[in-house]
Structure formats: structure tokens, C-alpha cells
Length: 374
Figure 1: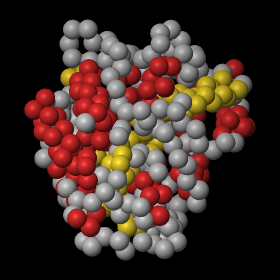
Figure 2: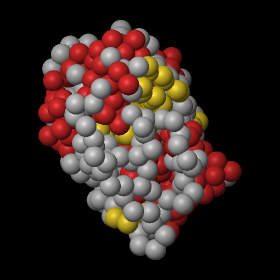
Figure 3: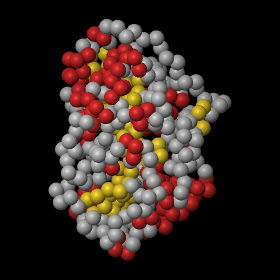
Figure 4: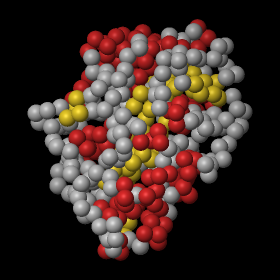
């Protein structure tokens, strides 16, 4: 099983100019914030019998996140005129493309859930037409209950997972159970722990350890999280969003904050484990959305329907070690020994969905900057 090193969440979540959302602090649904908020897009009338040979598809996605041969397969299957893939390294890079004004030329974008939410609040997304995506029936029921988009009204989930502590079971003297195990590590783990720098994930361990929502925008709660992070800093090996698995493998680190798909639990020695701390964690989701400006909306829906085919969607689980919210696809996958692909959807839904905070996201930018500077 190959695994790619994505920079899918780097740099960190930042506020996109003009996005202002009122957010339910505990993972609830967002609502329009009133004055200055753009209306949500109304659905266009689409033709279920449209001639796709007269349409093309342009997609923006992270490098390595879909099969390299996908354009050829899509053209052969859907009989579209053409398919082009543009790459983005980060959510922010994708948002720059999609919010620059006018027609971005993109039909389908792969972005994380909170960014899909932000795009929808700006009226930039075409509502999903379920009648054009019959393979939506392959999704787990839980995949329709994501707090940033309940009912998949404007987005379709592609991959999902959670964040926890990845650790060397043969090097720890006690298995970690709490976020405090990395925020205030025992003497035997001092300077052998890493945390993430991506803003919302830098804050996550401290917020959860304090009993706060990962989506808080309260200044006092964010300041208390900052205090906890600053106390932890001298005891860390460092901050690492991409190579923490390598540090565990080499033994340089014994515990790291990690996204589940990047915790190398399938290593040959089977000495790397993953745990969601008792205080809870997040539920991150990467989604597919259709741009309101697309001139190829029927083809865009057909593309998403094609991705949801079990044979196609299972590729993500088999090749990038990320769970997909597609029951029919996951039923095709035989997880290797130690794999985290067996985490159940109900377990994932115990995590708190990360949602867009609009202008309040700048508070996490400031938190990250201040922690890094001290």
C-alpha cells in the first residue's frame, strides 16, 4: 500500500476575505450572519439527459489524491469532450482560485468541509442534484449528518478521518490516553513529542484538554489554550505536520499528534499505535463541490457519481490510507494488519466537525503566530 505525503492542510486555516459566518460553537450548523452575507445559491435547472459529449470537466484537487489515469477513465466512461485536472497544494490555494471573481474555469473542486461551507455561504456553489448522482446511495448514513452540510446539500464527502496520538508502543512506559500526555509529557517522553503547526490542529489538543469546542471563537478560551500550548512548548521535540511518522519509526519521537491516515500503524514491526484521547477529537472531511459558475454542471454531477462508484472510490482507501465515507467502497477494501481503515463511521461521528469560523479564524492565526514567536 503506497502512501502519499500531502500538504493538504498546509498552511493553516485562515479567514478568506469576505467570509463571515455565525457558527454554533459545538460543531453545529452554521447560519448566515446577517448584514453583508451573500445569499446561498439557488439550484439551476439541469437536464438529466444532457449530451455529455458536448461538455468538458475541469477539476482542482490535491496532488496524488486521485488516480493519475483518472482523466482517461472519465473520458472513456462518461464520453465527455475532455477532462483536465489542476492541482492545488493547500485549501487556501484552492480558495484563491475559486474566489478570485468571475469564472474560475473550475467545475469540481476538492476542498475540506469548512471551506465548502465558506464557499456555499458566498453563493459560489451549485446545490447538489441528487437525482443526477444515484451513487449517493453508496454513502454511509452517517455521511449525510456532517455538521457543516447536513444532508449533503452542496457537497459530497470524499475522505474522512480524525486526529489523535500516534505512538511507539515499545518505547512508551504508559500508553497515552489523554491530550495532556503530549501537552505535559512524562519525564521519559520529554522532548520526544511532536505537535502540529496547522492552526486549528495546533489548538485542538489544548482546547479539548480544557473541555472546549474545537470551533470556539471565545477569546478567553483561546487565550487559555495558548497558555497551555506555551507551557508544552519547551517539552516538545518540535512541531511537525508531515514527517512525524518518520520520527516515530526512527525512535526520535515516542508520541506525536497525528491525522489517523498518516499514523504508520501498518509498519512491519507493528509497534506503532493510534489512540483518540479520552477528551475527544475532531472529524475532518474532504469534499467535492460543484461551482455555480460551471458551464458543465451535468458533466460535473456525472463525475462525482463516477467517483462514488465503489471500484473507483475504494482507490483512496487502498492508496492513501484514508477512509472513504462510502460503504460499498469500503466493503471492497481488505485493510492490512494494523490499519486504521476499520474505524467505524459511528466512531468518527463522535468527533467534532471542524467548521468555518469566518473572520474569527484570524484568532487562530494570531494564536499560532504568538506560540511560534515565544
